Image (cartoon, rainbow, N blue to C red; front, side, top):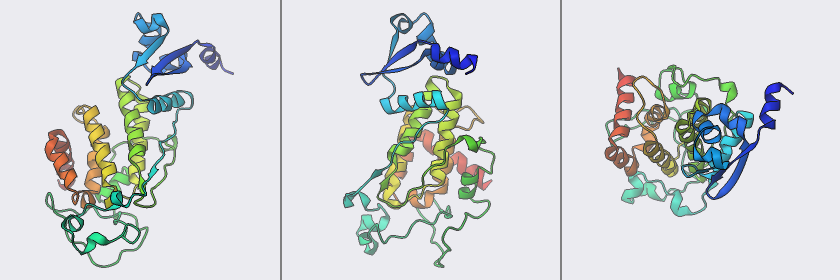
Amino acid sequence: MSSTDSTLFASKPFTFIVQGKPLYVHAALISACSKPLDRMINGDLSEAKQGFALLEDVDEATFVRFIRWTYSKDYPAAEHAIVEDEEHLNPTTEDSLAGGANASTSSETKPEPDPADDDWGVWGSVRKKDKKKKKENTAPPPGTLKESFITKSDGVWVFDDTLVASGRSNKSPKEDYTDVFLGHARLYVFAEKYDIQPLKELALHRLQHTLAIYTLYPERVSDVIALLKYVYANTAEAAEGVEDIRTMLAHYVGTEMGVLVRDGEIRDLMLDDPEMLNDFLKMFALRVS
């Protein structure tokens, strides 16, 4: 055992109270990764004197993932949910909203959205697709938004992928990934607030990786909307030239606009949030320039 390990495990446990539950972690481990948390443990703040800190800005699951990361430099993703209620599986496409012929199509027989399709038209409309049947498991064409998002070929989010645990792709519209997405996003927000840059980068890239292998069924647009709402409510606009979670999500929205634009809520969300709309328009301007 190295002297660093010896010092770490010999350090006195510090107590964090999260959602009324005491959670214990080696003080030296926390101090080493976050200056704000180090001040709570070793500084002149009241928390250091009383030996515990009450954290009211984080949920238990997120803090436990943080603790797991401090020991292993990785963390477990949240589990997806299974939606059995047919009412929540109806896609909010224009046909279903209008009661058209396609509204009665079941989620079991509805074809998957084409992963290579990022061909969307003016705001609020979708271009007609080629009727020819495409081959399954075909990689996105080079130069498309989808291809650049999956491969990060445009230089955004450069990261050592060997440090990112392999994610699980969804298999059907019954799989609700809201908690999976928010698990990564909440950890990103926590790491940003407490100045834990390595964890912030890891959470960002695990979320990007999850979205890259995620099939966006029309029935699951609400999962992405929940993610967008949380991120824009809990993060600030990035400095010019900085690639952050908002930048990544704007890129993702561009890749899936063919599906997202059919849902009225995504249009209302962007119109109600000028920062979100601005991020998307900047991304679109870069792609067409």
